[in-house]
Length: 239
Image (cartoon, rainbow, N blue to C red; front, side, top):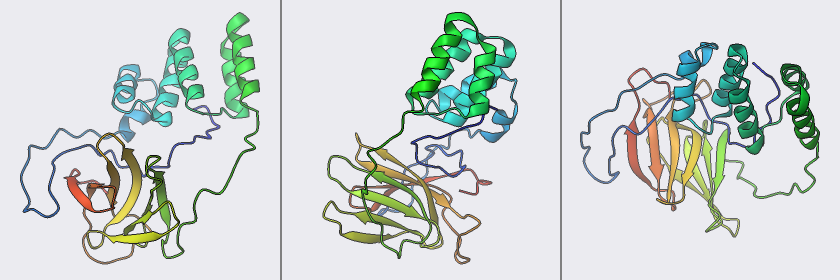
C-alpha cells in the first residue's frame, strides 16, 4: 500500500453497514426484508483482485482506503491509465501522498505523466494557514468519535463512545445531550442534507462501558437529535 494519508474525511469505525430496515422510533417494531450483507475488509486484503476492488469502489466511492487499494492493484496489473484516474480522484478529495508513496508513483511513470505527478506533489506541500476554532464540545462528551456540521442551520452533531449519547450544538454555542438506546455507543457520522437526517453507526467498541446489550446497526436522527430510524446490522457485526 502507498503510505501517507491525510484526509479531511471524518474517521469512521469499521462497520460495513447499509440500510436494512426502517423503524419509527415511536412506533412498534415493523419487519422489513433484509438486504444481502458483504464484508469489506476481506476484499481489501485481496490486493490483486481488481474486479473485487472495483466493486468495492462502486459501493464506497468516497472511501480513500478503497480507492488507494484499487490504485495499487491497477499498478500491479500494469494498468497505468486506470491508476492515473485513481491518483487524480484521491488528489481531488484532499489526499496527500507520503514521501514513500510519491517516490513509488514517480517511479511508475515517465515523460509528461511523471512531470504532471511532480507538479501535483509539489502543490500538495502548500500549507493550510487558515485554521480556526469552529466549536468547543462539552467535556461531558467523553471520547468523541466524529462530528458533522449542518451548514444551513449551524448545528453540530457529535457522537460519543463512552458517554453513549449524541450531542447537539446550536449556532449560539448551546449544547444538549440526546439519550440513545441504553448500552449503545455511537461511532461514525454521515449527514444527509436532502433528507435532513444524521446517520450514526451504533454498537459496542473496546472502550464502551459494560452494561446493557447495545443496538448494533445504524441510527438516523432528525435535526433536533431525536432518533427517527433504526437500521439493524448483520448478526455478527460489532457496530
